[in-house]
Picture 1 (spheres, rainbow, N blue to C red):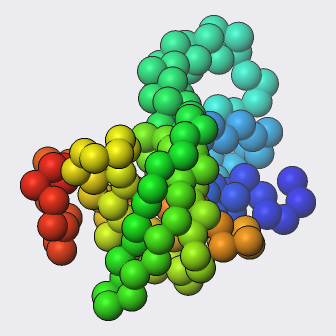
Picture 2: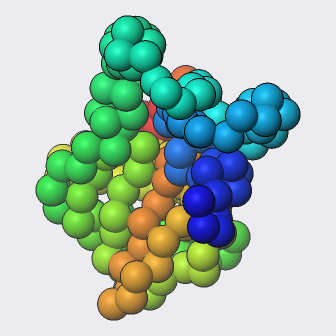
Length: 168
């Protein structure tokens, strides 16, 4: 396979942050068994040598089905417009959500934060109710003051700096 090969691509996917739990299956015709070790070190979930047995593929689909559905739900976007504010240190940026998912939100704001920065995000889901507060990292800045934010804390603890008692 031309560069990047499957192992290099697996490393890029795993270090990218968004797909840390997505199942990765490497299928190869390479007969060198050392490639198996390299693939798992790179982050592969499963490894198959060619020729692939039909029963192996069907078993693999059954095994990975739940995690694939979980990943699909995590990234399913819902188009919804909610007021949002982002705090990064002393800096405050406001705007609107363009869509939400379990794993993040896409925001159009007064200005975009820099790629990789983590901010406290308050989302007003319904007017007059306390905001939902999460910590999120900027993972995409496509332009027009839009940002893709990946939620980093969605657990029971309240993010540092959150003033709302409603925050998770």
